[in-house]
Image (tube, rainbow, N blue to C red):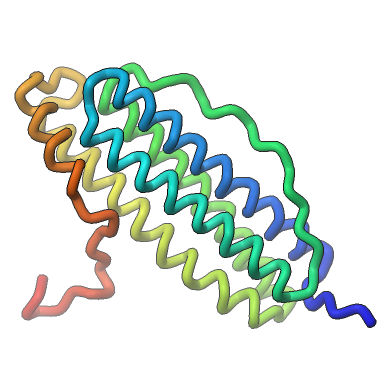
Length: 183
């Protein structure tokens, strides 16, 4: 008996996203290694934690595909892009990677909606929220770097940023959690 509950289009899309999450993990891992080699151990720690988070996202997709009775296709991932040139470039690349990932999630949400695949639509809502969080976090870091002087930030400021990111929370505060009493 065929127990697959995913269309071919959805199955292919979810498998592709699983690979995209694995690639995102490698990007964070690569940028973390670069940051560490440049002496930014705190920033490296932050990026390594996010590499692990992306691997967890990959596993969520893998498990969902299996639980819906479809076939998982583990594919090769592309090599990460070249190393950043500086801290601002690093987080600009992180932000762009998150935007690309968000757009891919949105395409899956649309497919699930168009197909009336409400189980997958529901599953993907967690990722919609997660991507909002990831983009917000990256934008907040870019804002801090901009305030610090951007590409011209001094060593003292970058030292502080490095120290702050070592233990910084991995989540951003989202608009949906705000109230008049808690802006």
